[in-house]
Image (spheres, rainbow, N blue to C red):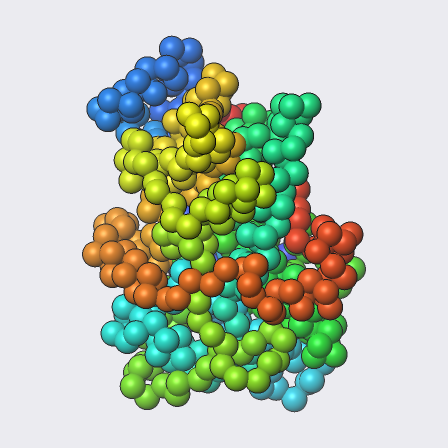
Length: 479
Ligand code: SF4
Ligand code: SF4
Protein backbone atom coordinates (compact mmCIF):
# COMPACT_ATOMS: atom_id res chain seq x y z
CA UNK A 1 0.00 0.00 0.00
CA UNK A 2 2.93 2.34 0.81
CA UNK A 3 4.01 2.31 -2.83
CA UNK A 4 0.65 3.70 -3.76
CA UNK A 5 1.16 6.91 -1.85
CA UNK A 6 2.59 10.32 -2.62
CA UNK A 7 3.58 13.04 -0.20
CA UNK A 8 2.25 16.51 -0.51
CA UNK A 9 3.36 19.45 1.61
CA UNK A 10 1.12 22.36 2.46
CA UNK A 11 1.23 24.84 5.36
CA UNK A 12 4.23 22.92 6.69
CA UNK A 13 2.19 19.70 7.01
CA UNK A 14 3.03 16.61 5.03
CA UNK A 15 -0.10 14.89 3.75
CA UNK A 16 -0.27 11.37 2.47
CA UNK A 17 -2.19 11.29 -0.73
CA UNK A 18 -3.51 7.88 -1.68
CA UNK A 19 -3.07 6.86 -5.28
CA UNK A 20 -6.65 5.77 -5.43
CA UNK A 21 -9.77 6.46 -7.42
CA UNK A 22 -10.07 10.13 -6.52
CA UNK A 23 -6.45 10.86 -7.44
CA UNK A 24 -6.55 8.98 -10.68
CA UNK A 25 -9.75 10.76 -11.56
CA UNK A 26 -8.29 14.16 -10.74
CA UNK A 27 -5.54 13.63 -13.31
CA UNK A 28 -8.08 12.56 -15.88
CA UNK A 29 -10.48 15.30 -14.85
CA UNK A 30 -7.94 18.14 -15.05
CA UNK A 31 -7.63 17.32 -18.69
CA UNK A 32 -11.39 17.64 -19.09
CA UNK A 33 -11.35 20.82 -17.08
CA UNK A 34 -8.97 22.55 -19.47
CA UNK A 35 -11.17 21.49 -22.32
CA UNK A 36 -14.14 22.92 -20.56
CA UNK A 37 -12.43 26.17 -19.60
CA UNK A 38 -11.03 26.74 -23.07
CA UNK A 39 -14.34 26.06 -24.68
CA UNK A 40 -16.06 28.15 -22.12
CA UNK A 41 -13.76 31.18 -22.48
CA UNK A 42 -14.17 31.03 -26.21
CA UNK A 43 -17.92 31.09 -25.84
CA UNK A 44 -17.96 33.79 -23.19
CA UNK A 45 -16.09 36.12 -25.55
CA UNK A 46 -18.93 35.77 -27.99
CA UNK A 47 -22.10 37.36 -26.63
CA UNK A 48 -24.24 35.64 -29.22
CA UNK A 49 -23.11 32.23 -28.07
CA UNK A 50 -25.80 31.79 -25.45
CA UNK A 51 -28.91 32.19 -27.63
CA UNK A 52 -27.29 30.03 -30.30
CA UNK A 53 -26.49 27.41 -27.75
CA UNK A 54 -30.04 27.27 -26.54
CA UNK A 55 -31.36 27.18 -30.09
CA UNK A 56 -29.02 24.35 -31.00
CA UNK A 57 -29.97 22.44 -27.92
CA UNK A 58 -33.68 22.94 -28.42
CA UNK A 59 -33.34 21.46 -31.85
CA UNK A 60 -31.36 18.64 -30.35
CA UNK A 61 -28.53 19.28 -32.80
CA UNK A 62 -25.74 20.78 -30.72
CA UNK A 63 -22.44 21.08 -32.57
CA UNK A 64 -19.39 19.26 -31.31
CA UNK A 65 -17.97 22.25 -29.42
CA UNK A 66 -21.13 22.90 -27.44
CA UNK A 67 -21.50 19.23 -26.63
CA UNK A 68 -18.01 19.12 -25.24
CA UNK A 69 -18.65 22.20 -23.11
CA UNK A 70 -21.98 21.09 -21.77
CA UNK A 71 -21.20 17.50 -21.06
CA UNK A 72 -17.71 18.10 -19.64
CA UNK A 73 -18.65 20.74 -17.12
CA UNK A 74 -18.41 19.79 -13.48
CA UNK A 75 -17.19 16.34 -14.19
CA UNK A 76 -13.76 17.46 -13.02
CA UNK A 77 -12.40 18.96 -9.79
CA UNK A 78 -10.79 21.94 -11.48
CA UNK A 79 -12.84 24.43 -9.48
CA UNK A 80 -11.54 23.11 -6.17
CA UNK A 81 -9.15 25.11 -4.06
CA UNK A 82 -5.91 23.49 -2.91
CA UNK A 83 -7.38 23.15 0.59
CA UNK A 84 -10.56 21.48 -0.66
CA UNK A 85 -8.48 19.05 -2.71
CA UNK A 86 -6.41 18.13 0.33
CA UNK A 87 -9.44 17.60 2.54
CA UNK A 88 -11.10 15.47 -0.09
CA UNK A 89 -7.96 13.44 -0.69
CA UNK A 90 -8.14 12.44 2.98
CA UNK A 91 -11.54 10.87 2.43
CA UNK A 92 -10.42 7.44 1.40
CA UNK A 93 -10.24 3.84 2.47
CA UNK A 94 -6.83 4.26 4.11
CA UNK A 95 -8.27 6.89 6.43
CA UNK A 96 -11.07 4.55 7.52
CA UNK A 97 -8.59 1.70 7.94
CA UNK A 98 -6.39 3.99 10.06
CA UNK A 99 -9.32 4.70 12.42
CA UNK A 100 -10.16 0.99 12.59
CA UNK A 101 -6.53 0.18 13.36
CA UNK A 102 -6.36 2.74 16.18
CA UNK A 103 -9.45 1.12 17.72
CA UNK A 104 -7.51 -2.14 18.04
CA UNK A 105 -4.65 -0.53 19.98
CA UNK A 106 -4.48 -0.24 23.76
CA UNK A 107 -4.57 3.56 23.86
CA UNK A 108 -8.30 4.06 24.53
CA UNK A 109 -7.95 7.85 24.22
CA UNK A 110 -7.66 7.36 20.45
CA UNK A 111 -10.62 5.01 20.12
CA UNK A 112 -13.66 6.16 18.16
CA UNK A 113 -17.11 4.71 17.74
CA UNK A 114 -17.59 3.99 14.06
CA UNK A 115 -20.99 4.76 12.59
CA UNK A 116 -21.82 4.19 8.92
CA UNK A 117 -24.78 5.73 7.09
CA UNK A 118 -25.65 4.23 3.73
CA UNK A 119 -27.51 6.24 1.07
CA UNK A 120 -30.51 4.33 -0.30
CA UNK A 121 -29.19 5.00 -3.83
CA UNK A 122 -26.12 2.88 -3.01
CA UNK A 123 -28.12 -0.16 -1.93
CA UNK A 124 -29.27 -1.18 -5.46
CA UNK A 125 -25.60 -1.16 -6.52
CA UNK A 126 -24.80 -3.83 -3.92
CA UNK A 127 -27.95 -5.79 -4.76
CA UNK A 128 -26.90 -6.01 -8.42
CA UNK A 129 -23.25 -6.73 -7.64
CA UNK A 130 -24.13 -9.41 -5.06
CA UNK A 131 -26.90 -10.91 -7.21
CA UNK A 132 -29.33 -10.64 -4.29
CA UNK A 133 -32.55 -8.76 -3.64
CA UNK A 134 -32.13 -5.37 -2.01
CA UNK A 135 -33.12 -6.60 1.47
CA UNK A 136 -30.60 -9.45 1.53
CA UNK A 137 -27.91 -7.29 -0.07
CA UNK A 138 -28.39 -4.60 2.57
CA UNK A 139 -27.97 -7.16 5.35
CA UNK A 140 -24.80 -8.53 3.72
CA UNK A 141 -23.39 -5.01 3.34
CA UNK A 142 -24.23 -4.35 6.97
CA UNK A 143 -22.54 -7.64 7.92
CA UNK A 144 -19.41 -6.60 6.01
CA UNK A 145 -19.24 -3.15 7.63
CA UNK A 146 -19.79 -4.59 11.10
CA UNK A 147 -17.12 -7.21 10.42
CA UNK A 148 -14.70 -4.35 9.75
CA UNK A 149 -15.40 -2.84 13.15
CA UNK A 150 -18.28 -0.44 12.40
CA UNK A 151 -20.51 -0.40 15.46
CA UNK A 152 -23.74 0.99 13.96
CA UNK A 153 -25.05 1.00 10.39
CA UNK A 154 -27.98 3.25 9.44
CA UNK A 155 -29.58 4.17 6.16
CA UNK A 156 -30.07 7.83 5.34
CA UNK A 157 -33.74 7.61 4.32
CA UNK A 158 -34.74 9.01 7.69
CA UNK A 159 -32.57 12.09 7.13
CA UNK A 160 -33.99 12.43 3.62
CA UNK A 161 -37.44 12.53 5.24
CA UNK A 162 -36.36 15.57 7.31
CA UNK A 163 -34.92 17.19 4.20
CA UNK A 164 -38.15 16.67 2.24
CA UNK A 165 -40.36 18.04 5.05
CA UNK A 166 -38.16 21.12 5.45
CA UNK A 167 -38.11 21.68 1.68
CA UNK A 168 -41.92 21.49 1.57
CA UNK A 169 -42.17 24.00 4.39
CA UNK A 170 -39.75 26.42 2.78
CA UNK A 171 -41.55 26.20 -0.56
CA UNK A 172 -44.85 27.29 1.02
CA UNK A 173 -43.11 30.20 2.76
CA UNK A 174 -41.44 31.31 -0.47
CA UNK A 175 -44.72 30.96 -2.39
CA UNK A 176 -46.47 33.30 0.05
CA UNK A 177 -43.81 35.98 -0.32
CA UNK A 178 -43.46 35.74 -4.10
CA UNK A 179 -45.17 39.10 -4.72
CA UNK A 180 -42.78 41.14 -2.60
CA UNK A 181 -39.58 39.06 -2.95
CA UNK A 182 -38.30 38.63 -6.50
CA UNK A 183 -35.86 35.94 -5.35
CA UNK A 184 -38.45 33.76 -3.61
CA UNK A 185 -39.32 31.77 -6.74
CA UNK A 186 -38.33 29.72 -8.57
CA UNK A 187 -36.96 27.62 -5.75
CA UNK A 188 -34.21 25.16 -6.65
CA UNK A 189 -33.69 22.00 -4.64
CA UNK A 190 -30.47 21.68 -2.65
CA UNK A 191 -29.82 17.97 -2.23
CA UNK A 192 -27.18 17.60 -4.97
CA UNK A 193 -23.70 18.87 -4.07
CA UNK A 194 -22.61 18.86 -7.73
CA UNK A 195 -25.37 21.35 -8.54
CA UNK A 196 -24.58 23.38 -5.41
CA UNK A 197 -20.90 23.63 -6.33
CA UNK A 198 -21.77 24.79 -9.82
CA UNK A 199 -24.29 27.33 -8.50
CA UNK A 200 -21.99 28.81 -5.90
CA UNK A 201 -18.79 28.86 -7.89
CA UNK A 202 -19.96 29.49 -11.41
CA UNK A 203 -23.49 30.93 -11.44
CA UNK A 204 -23.28 32.99 -8.24
CA UNK A 205 -25.97 35.46 -7.22
CA UNK A 206 -28.15 34.71 -10.24
CA UNK A 207 -29.05 31.41 -8.61
CA UNK A 208 -27.87 31.15 -4.99
CA UNK A 209 -30.78 33.12 -3.40
CA UNK A 210 -33.17 30.73 -5.11
CA UNK A 211 -31.66 27.58 -3.60
CA UNK A 212 -33.71 25.96 -0.86
CA UNK A 213 -31.86 26.24 2.44
CA UNK A 214 -32.84 22.75 3.66
CA UNK A 215 -29.74 20.64 4.28
CA UNK A 216 -29.21 17.62 2.09
CA UNK A 217 -30.04 14.13 3.43
CA UNK A 218 -26.32 13.46 3.95
CA UNK A 219 -25.73 16.53 6.08
CA UNK A 220 -28.90 16.06 8.13
CA UNK A 221 -27.71 12.52 8.78
CA UNK A 222 -24.41 14.06 9.88
CA UNK A 223 -26.21 16.22 12.44
CA UNK A 224 -28.35 13.35 13.60
CA UNK A 225 -25.31 11.17 14.24
CA UNK A 226 -23.01 13.80 15.74
CA UNK A 227 -25.61 15.71 17.71
CA UNK A 228 -28.46 13.36 18.65
CA UNK A 229 -26.93 9.90 18.43
CA UNK A 230 -23.60 10.75 20.07
CA UNK A 231 -25.51 12.18 23.06
CA UNK A 232 -27.55 8.99 23.24
CA UNK A 233 -24.30 7.05 23.36
CA UNK A 234 -22.94 9.47 26.01
CA UNK A 235 -20.02 10.35 23.77
CA UNK A 236 -18.75 13.73 22.63
CA UNK A 237 -19.08 14.15 18.85
CA UNK A 238 -15.35 13.89 18.13
CA UNK A 239 -15.34 10.40 19.66
CA UNK A 240 -17.72 9.26 16.91
CA UNK A 241 -16.32 8.64 13.42
CA UNK A 242 -19.10 9.01 10.86
CA UNK A 243 -18.68 7.31 7.51
CA UNK A 244 -21.18 7.77 4.68
CA UNK A 245 -21.52 5.34 1.77
CA UNK A 246 -22.75 7.32 -1.24
CA UNK A 247 -23.27 6.97 -4.98
CA UNK A 248 -21.02 9.90 -6.00
CA UNK A 249 -17.73 11.70 -5.33
CA UNK A 250 -19.48 15.05 -5.00
CA UNK A 251 -20.73 14.07 -1.56
CA UNK A 252 -17.11 14.14 -0.37
CA UNK A 253 -16.99 17.79 -1.34
CA UNK A 254 -20.16 18.48 0.58
CA UNK A 255 -18.82 16.80 3.71
CA UNK A 256 -15.80 19.14 3.83
CA UNK A 257 -17.80 22.37 3.62
CA UNK A 258 -16.80 24.80 6.39
CA UNK A 259 -20.27 25.08 7.93
CA UNK A 260 -20.33 21.36 8.66
CA UNK A 261 -17.17 21.53 10.76
CA UNK A 262 -17.18 22.36 14.44
CA UNK A 263 -13.90 24.08 15.37
CA UNK A 264 -14.89 23.86 19.02
CA UNK A 265 -15.18 20.08 18.93
CA UNK A 266 -12.71 19.64 16.08
CA UNK A 267 -15.07 17.35 14.28
CA UNK A 268 -17.12 17.16 11.10
CA UNK A 269 -20.75 16.02 10.85
CA UNK A 270 -19.54 13.54 8.23
CA UNK A 271 -15.93 12.48 8.68
CA UNK A 272 -15.55 10.48 5.51
CA UNK A 273 -17.55 9.67 2.41
CA UNK A 274 -16.75 6.52 0.47
CA UNK A 275 -18.49 5.70 -2.77
CA UNK A 276 -20.30 2.41 -3.30
CA UNK A 277 -17.49 1.32 -5.57
CA UNK A 278 -14.79 2.18 -3.03
CA UNK A 279 -16.56 -0.11 -0.52
CA UNK A 280 -16.86 -2.81 -3.17
CA UNK A 281 -13.14 -2.50 -3.94
CA UNK A 282 -12.41 -2.91 -0.24
CA UNK A 283 -14.41 -6.14 -0.29
CA UNK A 284 -12.41 -7.33 -3.28
CA UNK A 285 -9.14 -6.30 -1.65
CA UNK A 286 -10.05 -8.32 1.43
CA UNK A 287 -11.18 -11.23 -0.75
CA UNK A 288 -14.58 -11.27 0.92
CA UNK A 289 -17.11 -13.64 -0.59
CA UNK A 290 -20.75 -12.59 -0.26
CA UNK A 291 -21.83 -16.13 0.72
CA UNK A 292 -19.56 -16.08 3.74
CA UNK A 293 -20.78 -12.72 4.99
CA UNK A 294 -23.16 -12.62 7.93
CA UNK A 295 -26.58 -11.14 7.27
CA UNK A 296 -27.03 -8.36 9.81
CA UNK A 297 -30.05 -6.01 9.97
CA UNK A 298 -29.58 -2.25 9.85
CA UNK A 299 -29.65 -0.34 13.12
CA UNK A 300 -32.27 2.23 14.06
CA UNK A 301 -31.33 5.72 15.19
CA UNK A 302 -33.76 5.71 18.10
CA UNK A 303 -32.58 2.27 19.14
CA UNK A 304 -36.09 0.84 18.67
CA UNK A 305 -36.46 -2.88 18.84
CA UNK A 306 -37.16 -4.81 15.66
CA UNK A 307 -35.56 -4.51 12.27
CA UNK A 308 -35.23 -1.18 10.47
CA UNK A 309 -37.74 -1.18 7.63
CA UNK A 310 -36.23 -0.45 4.23
CA UNK A 311 -38.37 1.99 2.28
CA UNK A 312 -37.90 4.64 -0.35
CA UNK A 313 -39.43 7.98 -1.15
CA UNK A 314 -41.50 8.69 -4.24
CA UNK A 315 -39.72 9.58 -7.46
CA UNK A 316 -37.20 8.09 -9.84
CA UNK A 317 -34.44 7.25 -7.39
CA UNK A 318 -33.36 10.60 -5.99
CA UNK A 319 -35.65 11.00 -2.95
CA UNK A 320 -38.42 12.62 -5.04
CA UNK A 321 -38.24 16.18 -3.75
CA UNK A 322 -40.34 17.40 -6.68
CA UNK A 323 -43.12 14.88 -6.12
CA UNK A 324 -43.38 15.48 -2.40
CA UNK A 325 -43.36 19.27 -2.65
CA UNK A 326 -45.84 19.17 -5.54
CA UNK A 327 -48.39 17.07 -3.64
CA UNK A 328 -47.90 19.07 -0.47
CA UNK A 329 -48.25 22.44 -2.23
CA UNK A 330 -51.33 21.31 -4.19
CA UNK A 331 -53.06 20.40 -0.92
CA UNK A 332 -51.76 23.26 1.22
CA UNK A 333 -52.21 26.09 -1.30
CA UNK A 334 -55.18 24.93 -3.40
CA UNK A 335 -56.88 22.15 -1.41
CA UNK A 336 -56.23 19.62 -4.19
CA UNK A 337 -55.36 16.01 -3.37
CA UNK A 338 -52.90 14.77 -6.00
CA UNK A 339 -52.60 10.99 -6.03
CA UNK A 340 -50.58 10.36 -9.19
CA UNK A 341 -48.05 12.67 -10.74
CA UNK A 342 -47.84 12.79 -14.52
CA UNK A 343 -44.56 13.96 -15.99
CA UNK A 344 -44.49 15.63 -19.37
CA UNK A 345 -41.19 15.12 -21.16
CA UNK A 346 -40.01 18.39 -22.64
CA UNK A 347 -36.52 18.10 -24.13
CA UNK A 348 -35.58 14.61 -23.03
CA UNK A 349 -36.14 12.17 -20.17
CA UNK A 350 -34.03 14.41 -17.94
CA UNK A 351 -36.01 17.60 -18.54
CA UNK A 352 -39.60 17.04 -17.51
CA UNK A 353 -42.47 19.13 -16.28
CA UNK A 354 -45.37 18.59 -13.89
CA UNK A 355 -48.34 20.94 -13.80
CA UNK A 356 -51.52 21.48 -11.80
CA UNK A 357 -54.32 23.30 -13.62
CA UNK A 358 -57.85 24.27 -12.62
CA UNK A 359 -60.44 25.82 -14.94
CA UNK A 360 -57.74 26.63 -17.46
CA UNK A 361 -55.59 28.37 -14.85
CA UNK A 362 -52.04 27.15 -14.22
CA UNK A 363 -51.74 26.72 -10.46
CA UNK A 364 -48.42 24.93 -10.17
CA UNK A 365 -45.66 24.33 -12.71
CA UNK A 366 -42.61 22.38 -11.55
CA UNK A 367 -39.71 20.86 -13.48
CA UNK A 368 -37.14 18.10 -12.97
CA UNK A 369 -33.85 19.05 -14.63
CA UNK A 370 -31.05 16.50 -14.52
CA UNK A 371 -27.56 16.61 -16.01
CA UNK A 372 -25.44 19.63 -16.90
CA UNK A 373 -26.61 19.92 -20.45
CA UNK A 374 -30.17 20.49 -19.24
CA UNK A 375 -28.97 22.66 -16.37
CA UNK A 376 -27.27 24.94 -18.90
CA UNK A 377 -30.56 25.39 -20.71
CA UNK A 378 -32.31 26.19 -17.44
CA UNK A 379 -29.63 28.77 -16.63
CA UNK A 380 -29.88 30.45 -20.04
CA UNK A 381 -33.62 30.77 -19.51
CA UNK A 382 -33.05 32.13 -16.02
CA UNK A 383 -30.74 34.80 -17.43
CA UNK A 384 -33.48 35.86 -19.79
CA UNK A 385 -36.13 35.80 -17.03
CA UNK A 386 -37.94 33.02 -18.83
CA UNK A 387 -38.26 30.33 -16.16
CA UNK A 388 -41.98 29.67 -15.65
CA UNK A 389 -41.44 27.16 -12.84
CA UNK A 390 -42.07 27.70 -9.15
CA UNK A 391 -39.83 24.78 -8.23
CA UNK A 392 -37.07 22.96 -10.08
CA UNK A 393 -35.57 19.71 -8.82
CA UNK A 394 -31.99 19.98 -10.04
CA UNK A 395 -29.53 17.07 -10.09
CA UNK A 396 -26.18 17.14 -11.82
CA UNK A 397 -26.17 13.49 -12.93
CA UNK A 398 -28.19 12.61 -16.01
CA UNK A 399 -30.74 10.07 -14.79
CA UNK A 400 -30.42 11.22 -11.16
CA UNK A 401 -28.62 9.75 -8.16
CA UNK A 402 -28.69 6.09 -9.14
CA UNK A 403 -26.38 7.12 -12.00
CA UNK A 404 -23.83 8.68 -9.62
CA UNK A 405 -20.29 8.23 -10.93
CA UNK A 406 -19.13 6.63 -7.71
CA UNK A 407 -21.00 3.49 -8.68
CA UNK A 408 -21.73 3.55 -12.38
CA UNK A 409 -18.53 4.77 -14.06
CA UNK A 410 -16.83 1.97 -15.90
CA UNK A 411 -13.14 1.79 -15.00
CA UNK A 412 -11.68 1.60 -18.45
CA UNK A 413 -13.54 4.13 -20.55
CA UNK A 414 -14.89 6.33 -17.73
CA UNK A 415 -18.36 5.91 -19.24
CA UNK A 416 -21.61 5.31 -17.37
CA UNK A 417 -22.59 1.64 -17.33
CA UNK A 418 -26.15 2.03 -18.60
CA UNK A 419 -27.07 -1.64 -18.18
CA UNK A 420 -26.11 -1.41 -14.52
CA UNK A 421 -28.20 1.76 -14.08
CA UNK A 422 -31.22 0.04 -15.59
CA UNK A 423 -30.84 -2.93 -13.26
CA UNK A 424 -30.47 -0.61 -10.29
CA UNK A 425 -33.61 1.32 -11.24
CA UNK A 426 -35.59 -1.92 -11.22
CA UNK A 427 -34.16 -2.92 -7.85
CA UNK A 428 -34.81 0.51 -6.33
CA UNK A 429 -38.41 0.59 -7.49
CA UNK A 430 -39.02 -2.73 -5.71
CA UNK A 431 -38.82 -0.91 -2.36
CA UNK A 432 -42.10 0.20 -0.75
CA UNK A 433 -42.78 3.95 -0.72
CA UNK A 434 -43.10 5.65 2.63
CA UNK A 435 -44.35 9.20 3.16
CA UNK A 436 -42.17 11.19 5.55
CA UNK A 437 -45.30 12.81 7.01
CA UNK A 438 -46.40 9.39 8.24
CA UNK A 439 -43.07 8.36 9.73
CA UNK A 440 -43.49 8.24 13.54
CA UNK A 441 -39.71 8.30 14.08
CA UNK A 442 -39.49 11.70 12.39
CA UNK A 443 -42.29 12.99 14.62
CA UNK A 444 -40.50 11.76 17.73
CA UNK A 445 -37.20 13.26 16.63
CA UNK A 446 -38.79 16.64 15.85
CA UNK A 447 -40.07 16.69 19.43
CA UNK A 448 -37.25 15.08 21.38
CA UNK A 449 -34.24 16.27 19.41
CA UNK A 450 -35.31 19.52 17.79
CA UNK A 451 -37.89 20.83 20.30
CA UNK A 452 -40.61 21.09 17.67
CA UNK A 453 -41.02 21.46 13.94
CA UNK A 454 -40.66 25.24 13.78
CA UNK A 455 -38.14 25.65 16.58
CA UNK A 456 -34.90 27.61 16.41
CA UNK A 457 -33.07 24.30 16.88
CA UNK A 458 -34.80 22.77 13.83
CA UNK A 459 -33.91 25.81 11.79
CA UNK A 460 -30.30 25.70 12.91
CA UNK A 461 -29.68 22.00 12.43
CA UNK A 462 -31.80 21.29 9.36
CA UNK A 463 -30.92 24.35 7.27
CA UNK A 464 -27.80 25.97 5.88
CA UNK A 465 -26.78 28.81 3.62
CA UNK A 466 -25.60 28.82 0.03
CA UNK A 467 -23.34 31.68 -1.01
CA UNK A 468 -22.14 33.31 -4.15
CA UNK A 469 -18.49 32.21 -4.41
CA UNK A 470 -17.98 33.00 -8.07
CA UNK A 471 -15.56 35.83 -7.17
CA UNK A 472 -13.27 33.27 -5.47
CA UNK A 473 -12.55 31.50 -8.76
CA UNK A 474 -9.02 31.97 -10.03
CA UNK A 475 -9.02 34.24 -13.13
CA UNK A 476 -8.33 31.39 -15.54
CA UNK A 477 -11.43 29.63 -14.25
CA UNK A 478 -13.82 32.55 -14.50
CA UNK A 479 -16.80 32.04 -16.70
S1 SF4 B 1 -16.45 24.43 -14.68
FE1 SF4 B 1 -15.11 23.77 -13.06
S2 SF4 B 1 -15.65 21.67 -12.69
FE2 SF4 B 1 -16.55 22.21 -14.67
S3 SF4 B 1 -15.05 21.48 -16.09
FE3 SF4 B 1 -14.65 23.68 -15.71
S4 SF4 B 1 -13.14 23.71 -14.07
FE4 SF4 B 1 -14.01 21.63 -14.14
S1 SF4 C 1 -27.21 13.79 -8.83
FE1 SF4 C 1 -25.22 12.81 -8.93
S2 SF4 C 1 -23.79 14.30 -8.03
FE2 SF4 C 1 -25.87 14.90 -7.43
S3 SF4 C 1 -26.16 13.94 -5.42
FE3 SF4 C 1 -27.03 12.57 -6.98
S4 SF4 C 1 -25.36 11.15 -7.43
FE4 SF4 C 1 -24.44 12.90 -6.40
